[in-house]
Length: 427
Image 1: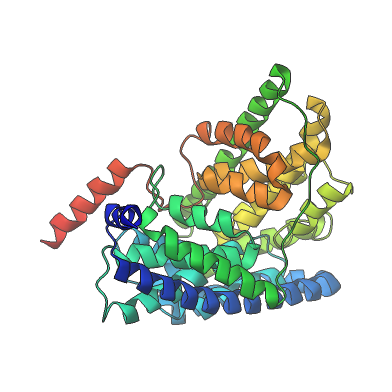
Image 2 (image 1 turned 30 degrees about the horizontal axis):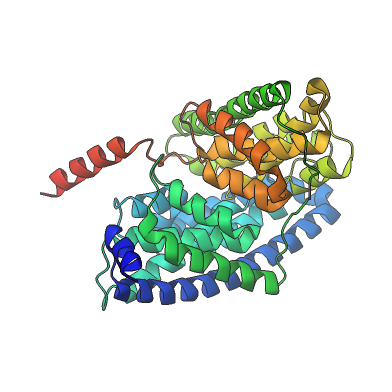
């Protein structure tokens, strides 16, 4: 008992704090699990409608983009910052997240997917979790003064959001712990984040959200040539994840510069280009999250050598134009499609390389390591862990410190310097 008490003190928490955070984790996890289930099931319904009426709906993509921009300009206020605001709150640079972030992110993502945009969904799930936890923190903060509670609660909500949608609680926990500051794990949030992640995953699962799972055969041995192949694959996947992250940053920056002060013009013009490209390139093959492409990879369906590249380009254009969604699911798809292309070149089984790409491109694009290894283990089986570790570590080393999350702090030193600057400005 003494050792447990000392552990709590080492991370700055008392028994009372643990109790409060545990209860908060259950509340946040339950609320986020329900919201994730509602969001995910309606998103699936939007996908079904798009698949049935794609040839009509795609022509309305530019107008759908204009509707999204209009909603955020009229109702969004600070919520229009999306994931940037989530990171600002987590890093102590903003006071909190508004409740309006939840319905706006959900509705606008549904619109993007319904009309054929190429985007993911996890950004919305994380925003849902973060917004719920931020408001629970405001309520709890009136009675309990927990050290750095804003960051603890935000990490808890992010874990719940990720887990509720992807059904990978362990990956969700460590994703939320390591994504804010590269190389820094906020262990004071480990307990409530774990409670919230498992609660959200259990509830959303009961409400119909399923996990993509594919048990991959393992037992390849650890020969030198095999290990070298894994390292080279990790290098390639790391570079691709980096190119995707940097591509979003560059394209978004340049479009904002070209269309300064004209967000409607930007989303309509780029939306028209997107509609033509998505229609011309295999009739909507790259619309939505790309999960259907990933399923084709693992089921032995037809995958073109350029699928990974086109999915990446169209996702970058969609999100840079002003549509709402996420990048994680497309990263999974890009990695799996690229793995399909690389497998015969390396003389390795396609499912193995697809799983490695699925995981390592995600890790490189988000600049996370533990979360990437765990998501691969939860999706493809824990027997894959040694191979995932080698590939993901290599991808992490060679991702050049890039991330799809522009507000992510690249080091603790950078974070401390910016915090000191902000505190100096306040004084």
